[in-house]
Length: 206
Image (cartoon, rainbow, N blue to C red; front, side):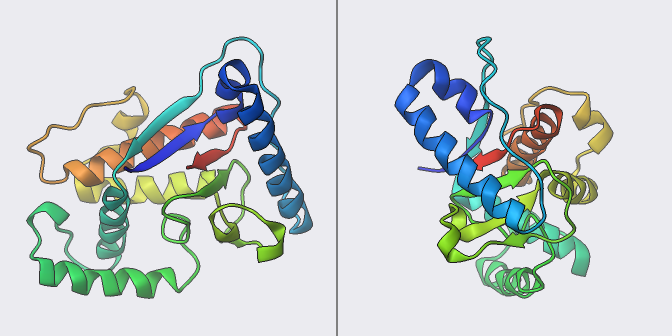
């Protein structure tokens, strides 16, 4: 069981699951309306109807936590991989992550672990929609562009060159890389951001 990340969900469901497509189209319309009320103008493009495939990826939920941890460590001091970090120190680091999350400024940190959206619209801080809006992920919505910028700033700390990554399609991380978990999550999110910005479609956590 893990986190699935999709860009172009409606395109895929439109061909294989019309009922599912209708359901998610309604949810995305609710999202667009709630964002509009916040002054953010975006809506999911209609399915292309050309057999376009969705971009999908995913990883264990823990990988996202590991990536968030190194994001915070990079700001505060030395970065170490989760795989070789003492459990007691890792728990201490989690406290630092919680502190940074409560600043409500990071699009990587301020987002549900298992549901919700990033949209290709530019806004400085994550958006917190009211509960009554009924938006998945607790109503926290991130900006695709801001997430991409955070990922690129983080990249060198875990041994990734952002420019090289942008030119490489779905690189494979070696299993014995100490940052295997963090890099895998980084590449999936980075690829999703690029696809979202290129197509105008939301990144969907599900």
